[in-house]
Image 1 (cartoon, rainbow, N blue to C red):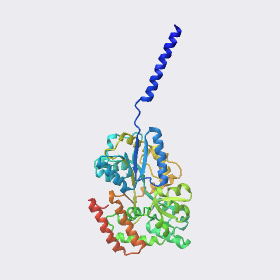
Image 2: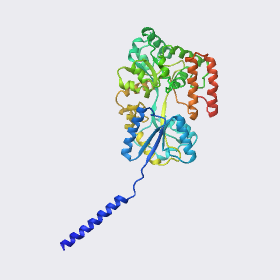
Image 3: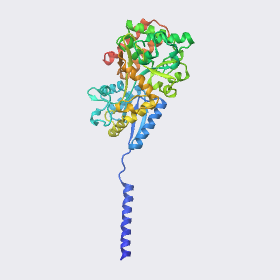
Image 4: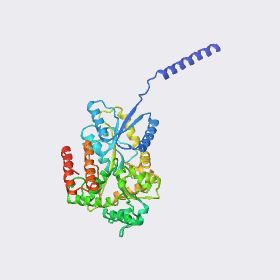
Length: 428
């Protein structure tokens, strides 16, 4: 009898093993998901590498793979519009500036994200949360913020003009004006022979943002509304003077970190992400400062990037998990430390460490200035390139070629007006 019991037990065990093996082999396997994430942000190679590393971490945690696809804005618009309008959507998530998402929302091309509910454990800044609501829907989740600042090689402070102190520059007092910047640059040139100012006027640089988002609001009070005005004429006269003390290689600069690190320029304006390498490489060599003020105030751009889901996109729950991951405070702090974009949630700021805090302090001083004229990049959709070209064309003709200011402004004002008339929105 004992032998019979043993035999029965062995048979039962064998049946169980076979059943388990069959279950393992033939059980329904979970669907493998790969998200396509198109983005106009984080496109430089080093930023792409960081982003892919971050998304790999998300994949390890969730089993969801992500194909990160950096695109220019025009290409992204064409892709998303074609997919949504044809009903064959392959893009799962969009990363873009608020102005870019605004265009998609205006055309009904993105989902209302309010259907996913709130994201616990994080507090979005109210102004950013408000900016994410467009055309009656929650069109995006605030992802990253950024702005543009002045970075100064500390050597330059030895040549401050009379009446301007280091504290004035760092704190952004009333004395830190564009005229003071010109006097400072002139003083450096006369004492050292160095054209110390640097601007990203290369083909891939963001000089157009300096023109429409900084100089124009500071001199005219508007980005485009007073493009051709007496105040604008004074602006261009000023820029011609400043260019005399600007490194002529600026027309080749796409980003200012390298020229700063090489010592080619001592005072540079650029996007925080494009000067970050200088700050993190030599934090004791540089100081991050607010931009100067002009006759109308201290104009500057607040850049907000958001995450959106195209209308009818597949795997939306998986896309929302990615949104949740990218807005976690600890992930946002890592983004700030590695690529220089600042968090959109309050809980992330205390977690930021290292030299990036210098940038954060400079940005805070700029935003805290009482004479601030904060502007957003206008939502122009496919016309954004034409808008940028108007300002860059004016710069080329007036500053580089020396053409008549009034004549150039009259020519380009017509191009600018046609953009806003076609879009049926008022010029900002």
